[in-house]
Image (cartoon, rainbow, N blue to C red; front, side):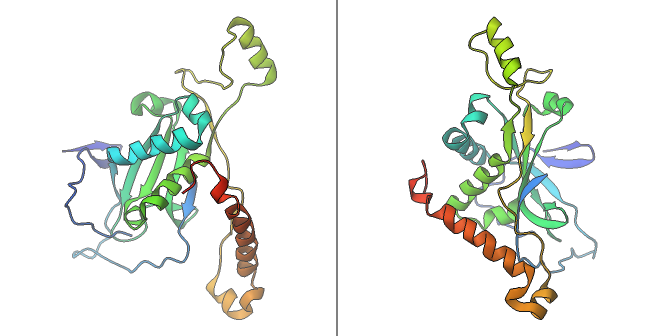
Length: 231
């Protein structure tokens, strides 16, 4: 069975485990260097992007990620819905015009009431299917890293704890759900042009950015084995 919401068709059934995989091509995890073939359906028209709610194994993995590394989201009982997107004619998820593995957004107050969660993660299913189990966990962790609680000010917290000493330290909305804000990544490689690299080689700003970010990433990698829950 399917449900139609705002003109978009959603599947309510899980995909069978033995079903064949069809490869389909806010804040987000971008996919670099991907080139999608101009696939078309037999009628020669673009296929629409379709959506389905993630299986329970994905949401369970997300709960484990939050419990292990995102204590603020765990303590505030932040609820994150996960939706898979599919499109046979191109990237199912984009951000700023570029293909993206996934992206996450804060759900508006009215939609929190109807959807029952506070943030929504959208994942390109064809890309997800190509990730290893460890990479899937890392992707979920990355998207959660974009979310943080809106804290009470020192004055607000002091006043609240005069009435309730055990009062939590974050703001809530009219539904009593924790208010969230998004945070950007620690760095960004930026966009790139093939022809610029052809003309300037390693002097191209694209290479300068990549080398800078690789230096930052390698520095973080040195602490990888010492991080709690690292794999």
